Amino acid sequence: MDATDRKILAVLQAEGRLTVTELAQRVSLSAAPCHRRLRELERSGVISGYRAVLDPGAIGRGFEVLVSVTINREDSVAAFEAGLAAIEDVVHAERLFGEPDYLVRVATADIAAFQKLRDEKLARLPGVQRMTSTIVMMRVVDNRPLPT
Image 1 (cartoon, rainbow, N blue to C red):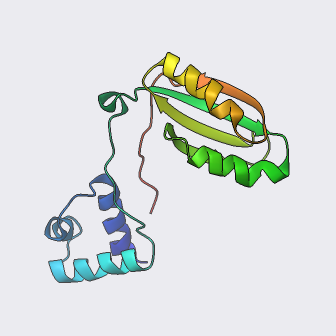
Image 2: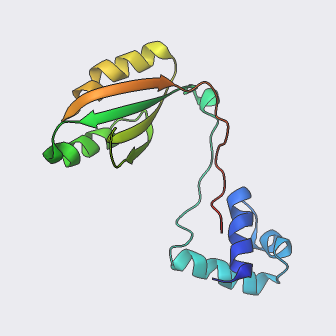
Image 3: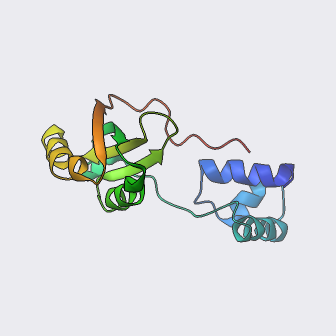
């Protein structure tokens, strides 16, 4: 990966819907070489996909909560993760070293919807020992591009 590939990645992280022609202009290449580089970045897995970033409030998911979860047995990991993946309101989850074991981002319509989700789904996942919920007041940094 060279400096031109890094420029392509930086531009695409900021504006993923550019045409190859627009992308080529931004990185000072002609369209054909830019297209070849882009396809190679995709083929090699550096670019793993493209997606739309949604406004949670606009789709009725403006209430966000970070849930710290500690599980009680190592043999619960696979079952816990499978159960977590099946919950639609879980928008992001990370397994951590130390405590807590997981940090889970949940998006619901409001606090009542979150309470129902917490009581009826999250708390009933296999191995859950302890959960702590923190309401997200405001996203300060969102979708920051990865350094290239």
